Image 1 (cartoon, rainbow, N blue to C red):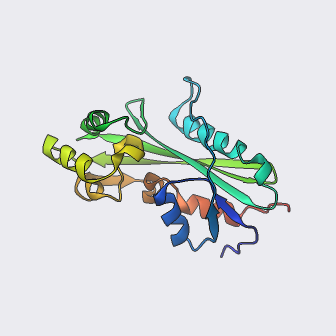
Image 2: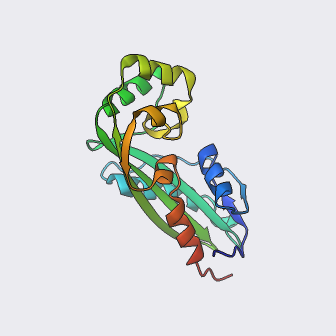
Length: 193
């Protein structure tokens, strides 16, 4: 059982990450800082997720004294293409059309920072989509909020219920925070205070 000894700061505005942290019975507060999320073009998908999570963590260097800062970044990769957050409804339609009837990978990079020390990991989940009709895609975009989600979808939303045929790997990773890996990292932390 993880015994929380240090205050935890979740550096994420994602409501899904906040829900997952609450479901884990972790006591935390949310603190946000704007961070440039660009990355070098030559990185592999897993490296991108970790690179951005660590970039976010470095923005909290001064704040990590006596606290654990958790930062994360989730990306969707389809045939080697990175599908980030859509720019508009047309872009979301393009992404969901690509994912329809195929499989893709979801990568989440997570960084834990305490007293200036950053420890990072990533998780990968393979997601298999059924074929979506244009009407289903349009319905989802109009009635849900795909604009703040990598790949233009949330597995916990309507589209996850009707379109995700199966996954290989962590469900919570697709939501944006691989909770099993995070719990293990916190439990094994041994942070020097």
